[in-house]
Amino acid sequence: QVQLVESGGGLVQAGGSLTLSCAASGSIFSVRAMGWYRQAPGKERELVASITSGGTTNVVDSVKGRFTISRDNAKNTVHLQMNSLKPEDTAAYYCNADLFSQRLPGRYWGQGTQVTVSS
Image 1 (tube, helix red, strand yellow):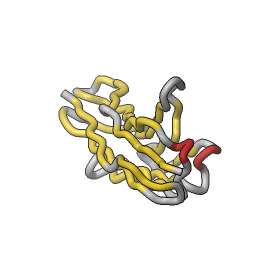
Image 2 (tube, helix red, strand yellow):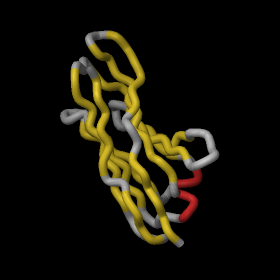
Image 3 (cartoon, rainbow, N blue to C red):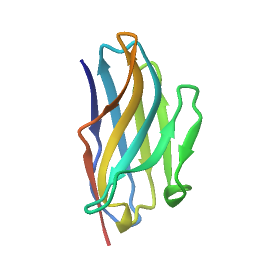
Image 4 (spheres, one colour):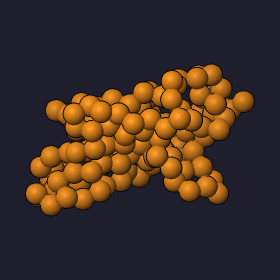
């Protein structure tokens, strides 16, 4: 009843930019934190950035200064602006949302979008 749909992944050269977007829809009462995780082949899924409903952000050190997370609370969307991309940023990126659906809390995930950075 809740869907998170990501868009914006693709292939880019090192030093380039991409913007990922994620829209949450369905039976949503309220959205708390939203964020982006990534998983490279053979590695565990890791947090990239998160943002609370109040706009407080958390960005991991490996992307700090290059990636910016933002959200539109009215549209239940979250965006990840990625600049100065590096080959090590190559991964499947997943949108995540902690929200209340029918007044019950839950954590929801998108299907993932691939980001490939060529050297």
